[in-house]
Amino acid sequence: MDFPVRIPFVEQLGFRLNSMSDGTAELSVQLTNEQTNSFGVAHGGLTMTLLDVAMAHAARSVNTRSADFSPGVVTIEMKTSFLRPAQGTLIARGRLLHRTATMAFCEGSVLGADGALCAHATGTFKYLRALPAASRELRPLNGPPRIEGRGSA
Image 1 (cartoon, rainbow, N blue to C red):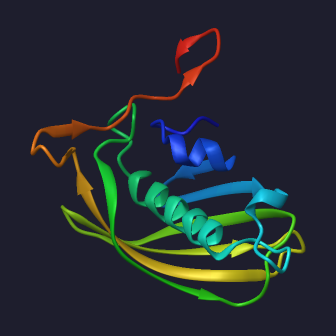
Image 2 (image 1 turned 30 degrees about the horizontal axis):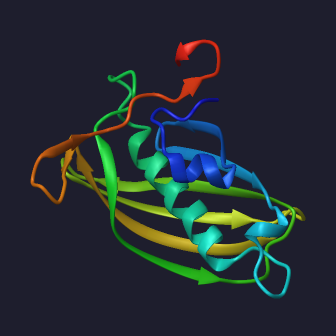
């Protein structure tokens, strides 16, 4: 399935959105050599980004009244525990635990190719319709990703 908004960094990393609904989201990524650390396993930064994106999409999944699942969310804080090295195709699952009008409290897990739990995180996200940029002008969410040859998705 397509991501509801375009996130260039996530595209560059090769993340795929497998599902997103009712307070949950699942992503996957096929680990490449460029995404590994000096031990040849998933770099912690990649794992944390995968968790962050999975939890953020779980938080946004309850906004079904909008075609792009807006408002967006920004990460306020995140705590990650690494349990074992991650290799192969990684699966991340995010879950919305609780939400208020402006905040979302989530948890996420990354499973390795063998199905073993590799990392776990909790995070707090703030719902935003736009983000004030350095110039103090509001920056709206990016639109849906562009599909080659089809225009906007």
